[in-house]
Amino acid sequence: MTGVTDDAPVTEQPNVRLLDELLDDIYHGQERISQAGIYRRAVAAELPAELLSRIAALPEGEYAVDEVAELLGGTVA
Image (cartoon, rainbow, N blue to C red; front, side, top):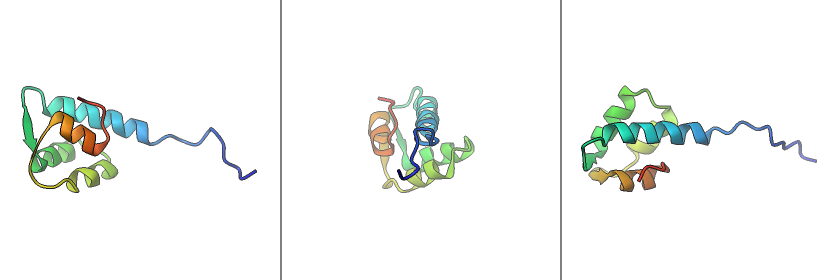
């Protein structure tokens, strides 16, 4: 055996939930938001560094919620 167990912590799920909550909040009443706007709101919401890095890596431009959720791995559509 290699010592792999099912007890390993799952770190991805909380980040998806945080991302979905952010997108729900910032897209309320908005159709498209710029990458810079999404990043600013993510920083203000104190999202984990891993999510901030993914948002920062998005090409500049405006995104609809479904586009950005797909690119970042969220589930909001």
